Amino acid sequence: MRLSERLFKGRTGALFCDTGKVTNSIKSRVAAEGNGGTSMLSMVAPAGIEYMPDRYEDAVILSEDDRRLLMGIRKNNTDNDLKAGELLLYSKGGAKIYLNNDGEIRITGTVFINDVPLEVD
Image 1 (cartoon, rainbow, N blue to C red):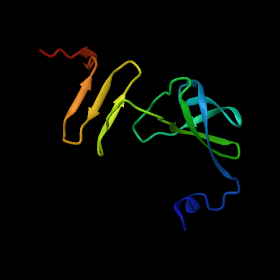
Image 2 (cartoon, rainbow, N blue to C red):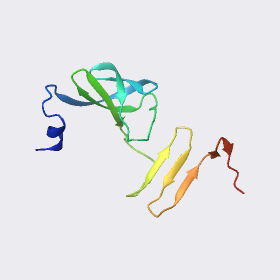
Image 3 (cartoon, helix red, strand yellow):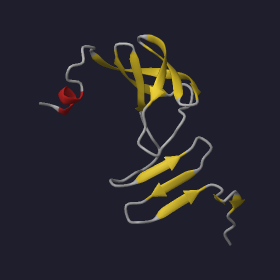
Image 4 (cartoon, rainbow, N blue to C red):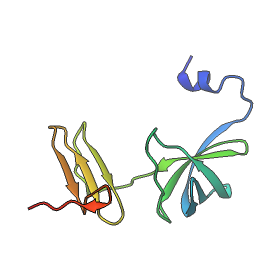
């Protein structure tokens, strides 16, 4: 039995995956417009990570009956040259934390420790 069949065993609603454009985001919910119209979506993210998608980004939406979840944002193209095993956290304002697969950590932007800017000579 496939994992998806085990997860949804006994449920009567059909699962449907769609994309839509983010129209608004408030706290932990996002409004997106897809084939089914505009919906308020609960967000899904890995434990310990919170994010707010920007307007007009492509939302990936998982639906079952009247429940809809924002599973993430589809990345069509990227200027970042990530290699296998690497991670990049970034913001629209240009801040970046890049974890290289060779153990380096590169931080771009102003770094604050306990609300005090870190000054590097």
